[in-house]
Image 1 (cartoon, rainbow, N blue to C red):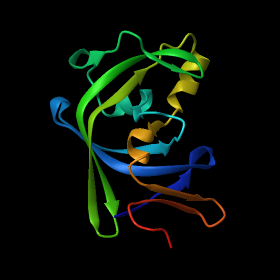
Image 2: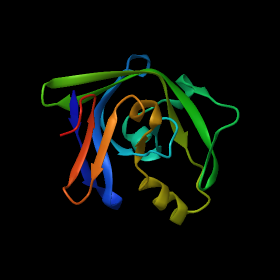
Image 3: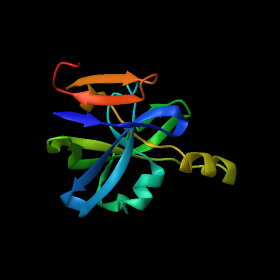
Image 4: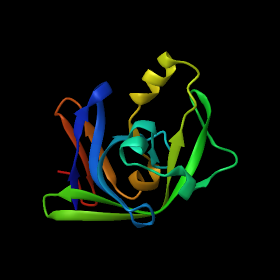
Length: 148
């Protein structure tokens, strides 16, 4: 299996997948920033809105998630599958849960900044595979094979 990504916004590596959550009847593409600093995969505000995540249908964690900006409301999206396009076809990845973050902006400027934050592909996925990031060669690859 070899998943090819791309260098995108923030000059950072991204993978694209189709996110499927049967509980909320979601089947939509999502672009995920590869984040080796994130312990888990997170859907952020703009994608949560685009995916029409109904927060009343999912569980909120009492403790939230701590990030650079402080603690943010965190919800659990259960039984999620991500489908990645590969050269061989499609690779399916199952998650018991993915976290959904919901910020509470204090002003319009902060709200605008929050809307630019991408969803994150964390180590709950990345640690399963080999990750190759080579900006000089414009290469972003996740694989379970030996790299060339």
